[in-house]
Length: 157
Image (cartoon, rainbow, N blue to C red):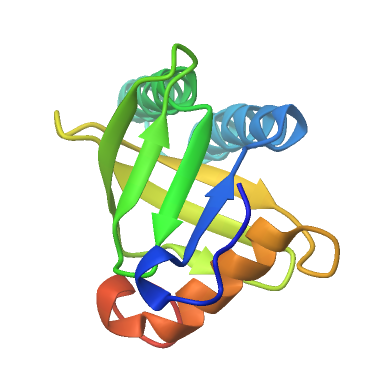
């Protein structure tokens, strides 16, 4: 998808998440969950509360990982328009409207997008790119800078 520069109404960025970024997120999530369990088990508490907190932390980590994996399976491509609309495309070609959530950030070579589906489920997507090589990445950066009101503020959403 090429960025249309002549009209701001058609200005959009199409982005495809990489497998390596998705694997990194899954590994990071698993590492954070296990680290949290180990830290809880090292706390100076009685064994019963320690065990309860560790199980609760592990359960919350599993729930978050499940939501992350489900979100990753639902979306294989993103399209962000200058008007602030965000769409996701599934592997079968279906288009789904998404809501960009606060905490989303776009940097020079990395973006963290927190999105919510119409059914209320949410997840985060790590995207990477280089505006000097990839027109869509450059368009994402321009859309992000120009549409601060659509995305929630000058430093991100």
